[in-house]
Length: 251
Image (cartoon, rainbow, N blue to C red):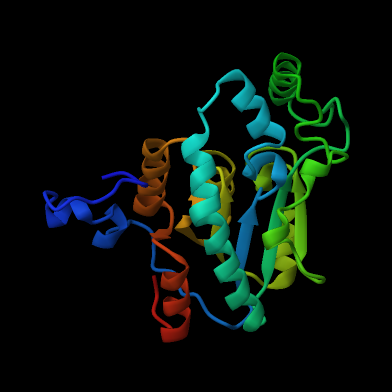
């Protein structure tokens, strides 16, 4: 059974379960607490990456109409509501929130890796959509429904993984953060790259299934299954995170 698939009566109990329901993982359990050491991480939830008719998504849609229908539905129906629920809880409990954004101040992307720069410029030329990841484009903004409030940390990156092209590690350490609840897009690209790099640097990471989205369900599930088995933990929803924190139960 893959994400977004409707369960039927003919499916066995095993088929109805998600892989993380079995709890097995090589990674150590993760304690999420209200002590200031657990942060919500929101990755690349900008209009250019997380809305149907802007930036990257618009460019891809022009070249391959309908190819992002599943992704766009998931962002609207699951990811935005999940992040909003987590933001409400973290803010109410004065727990830190960190946003990661993707983009360049240079409309020619000269500060980005060569292959990324070439890919973006080629996509812009073919699609007629300019400034896809340029910070001067209005689509660079984080989506209004989940935008930061004053005092929350925003980290700008130039690559898929935040730890490769920003000072996020310095900022997390300066805030005393040890565990991350990770949400955002896309599951197998910027979310996974950032979360794996965080684990390699000693942070405990929990990915929220309904708080992440990929271009197809199979890639989404494969990413989460691998991460849960080897790197950290995956939970189904915001309510699982909230329950773990309130009950002081390790995930």
